[in-house]
Image (cartoon, rainbow, N blue to C red):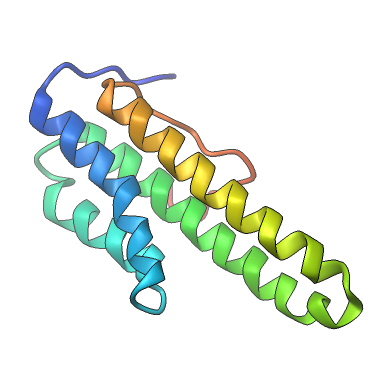
Amino acid sequence: MELIVTDHDEKTWGMMCHFASFLGFVVPLGNILGPLLVYLMKKDIYRFVEEQGKESMNFQISMTIYLLICIPLIFAIVGIIILPALLIFWITVVIVAAVRNSEGRSYRYPMTIRFIQ
């Protein structure tokens, strides 16, 4: 069920759950730690942030697992093709999720293993 919100602050913090994953370009595992920090700070205040924080963390953990699987596949040449495609997919869906949240609409990532319920 899609959650729709109208509160500006709630939409902004929901969007930050997704954009915080770009911290992974600067800090190792920042793609997981960024959404986790936003989630922990605002989950008790905003239900939307709680939902989208879990969604973002599940996706980031899933993508980290997929990345770790791709690394040895580089030696089999397959990883050379899959790794850039995975990176482009990751950036694209994070931006789509953030835009959807800025509109006040929840987003469910594709290819996500639901670790956190």
